[in-house]
Length: 388
Image (cartoon, rainbow, N blue to C red; front, side, top):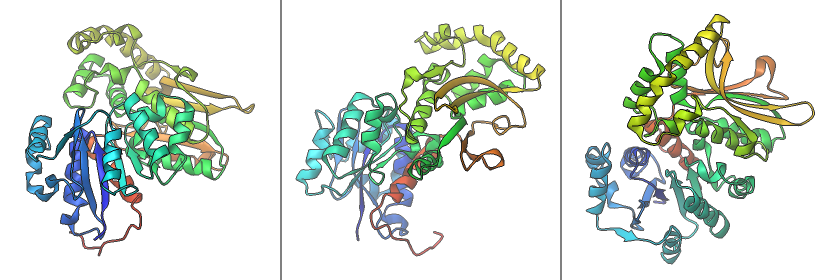
């Protein structure tokens, strides 16, 4: 039996544990569905990695999943008990070990971290100095550095999968890649890329609760980042817009984007989470006034990422609150759903290309990573089409 050997970077986080549990239950040999199933041979944390060329023993007992799925501490305790842990100085040690084990060219890395410089360097080393594959949900390596870094990493379509950096892999990136590869010019993008900010807007337009109350509920439900300012500053949305624009050929970086946070910047400078949650009560009236003003004109507000290509070829990039009609594609968004509207030379007017997807919780993101991982499987074979 042939296997798809996988190394999971950052597998102890919320998405990582969900990814591991889905893979073990659905994609390994236990499912008896895949003729060439997934085999996780390594898993990293911030200090080292678990490695077994034949597959981590964690895959041998799916019944143990409930012990660690919902607890990072229990997961690490469980993994430490496997006696397969190795310290490392940097991620390059992992590449060397794989080569020494005679497995070069057989590995798919799955990046579920929020790493920056170290992960950028590792992604570049994998793409430039090996034949391995990377599937990433980590948008930093391809959004916060130069367009040259993006183009270097993504030039091999079959070896670098980054669909899950935008809308958890819901075809936004894949469609934009197809537009670029078929020379179809993208003239306009309007998108709601944040399930958190979408939820806030949908609740605020009801006019029943204050902004700070809704934000507090969103935090309690796990919709926000650990520090909600990391949602409200709009940087995550801006990075997704950068990835999209680069995907269809534009040389764009953060200074090129006209960025307006969801609330005033003075609130976004508060680092202590408790102090921040108390202080944002001071934004309640301003936010209410904005939504009331839009409503008085028959409109509502959404937090929108916008790209426009003018007739003279100049591009504009904007991220911020925008008034839209309630019955428009963005105005009808409810809950934490995401949506992107793309206009090209062919797809325009009544033929605009619209993609909508659920907000990217751990389960959705983990599924998207599995989907893209399977799409990169060399010699992928179908199963026997049993339903179980």
